[in-house]
Image (cartoon, rainbow, N blue to C red; front, side, top):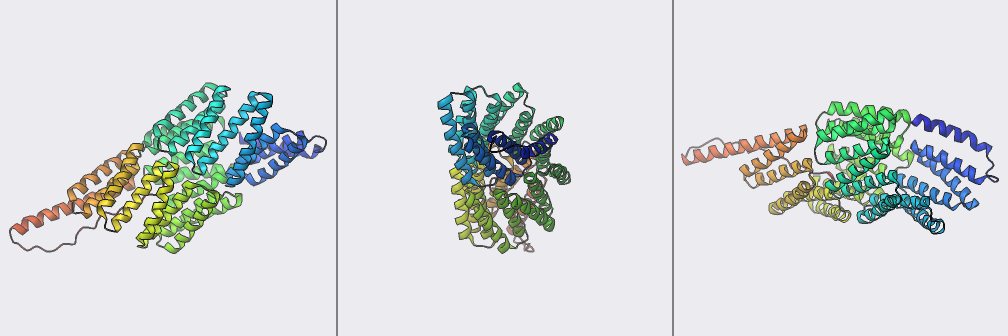
Amino acid sequence: MLGFYRRAGFIYAQLLPWVDETAEPLIAAKLWRSLADVKSIFGQEQEAMVDYEKALGLCQTAGDRAGEQGLLTAIGEVSFVLGEMAIARDCYARSLAIARDLIATTKSAEGRKEEARTLFDLASYYYRTGESSTAMDYAERARQIRFEIEDKRGLGASLNQLGVLHRRQGRLGEALRCYQEALAFRQEIGDRTGIANSLSDIGNVYRTRGQTAEALVHYQQALAMHQEIGDKAGVAVALNNIALIYKRQGQIEQALSTYEQSLAILQEIGDKERMATSLSNIGDIYETWGQTEKALGHYQQALAMRQEIGDKAGVAGSLSSIGGVYRTRGQTAEALVHYQQALALRREIGTKSGIAGSLNSIGLIYKDTGQTAEALDYLQQALQLEEEIGDKAGVAAAFNNIAVIYYRQGQMEQALQTYERSLALDREMGRKAGMAIKLGNIGSIYWARGQTKEALIKHQQALVIRQEIGDKSGIASSLNSIGVNLVAIEYRGIRSTRDSWNTTIVTQKRPECPSLEAAASGA
């Protein structure tokens, strides 16, 4: 499939010098747009932008309003990818106004189709900036138009988008319903690329729920379909998703091998945006192994690539990952610098979910350095943003981390109540990995209160969930906590019995308190 696009791009580039832009502006505009489309497919967004703008100027000169409208949408989409959110929003708004003018004049179905596309893009814009209710409104309007004009391909895309929005807000049942409806439409029209994408989206819901076996089945089905149609980019994405499951199941070697397969394909096709994601994911594996130098190297490669293509959101993500390595090493000053750089970028592009993630990370640095008042301030800011955008997973993570601060401050009752709120949200969403973290942390609260039997029950509940989802590192953590509690129960029982005999026993060091786990934003 990508070979076809490469040949097409070559042909467009060869034809352009033969076209007189003054005499035939619309033909030239179509060629410039087609060449830009090809460059965008290959992740060459900056180069694509130049060509789109040439085409736009030609359409405006020729008075081609329909062509102008489509190009404004395309420029908005590229600006969106590059993190130029104000430009994207402006282009979408201008495109929507032209589309509505054209509909009023021509009453054409094509005009309504373009209106739906722009509404769809506006929904993506507001999703990215964290304005979930506005995003949902635009997405639903796009879906309604596509339903009315019987645009089944577009309808599948709109249902998929609605699924993404529901998933962000923790409504996993609604998300799954939308994804399954999208799959049905795509199967009806034989859209094999769309079918593969829907299978991946359904897998994402199962992964979020902790149902890793079901997720893996759907990802493997998506992989097979992408391979069948020769969609190398789709194959790379499917391999990346499969690697995520292997990592979740503790099959770290297999996860690394699968990530590297994905990266090799992306290098072959020159998709720099996704290459950066793969490099970052490989860095995560090395960080899991404690190989921080290798992790840092991969994160820095991803950062350089994202800077090269102008992906501001990606740059912020890489800066955050690099900060995470420094935090792991105990280099809190360096970590804080990178987290603050990421925060500044995210504020610049206006992504509320990203801002919340950075605030969360900075709060954890202050926790690490014992500055609990500052930590609490940042974590509460993160919580407020997560609540504004309706990201229940983010709210649950923020509650968890705020509870850690209350624990550090000795406010055990407040810590317990906050953990319970976090746990309730995870249960509501079916997020099993999050549930296990919160149960373990609640167990640690009971431990600190001297309620070792209650603590043991919570850690055992966490263990059952981690065994169910195949979280090997989590299983080890739970087993350690259970062992600590069992030793404490036995120790206290012996002391009580011997004390009743007035017999002196040798003082033993109290078992170490099981550690509290901080949650990443959205974990």
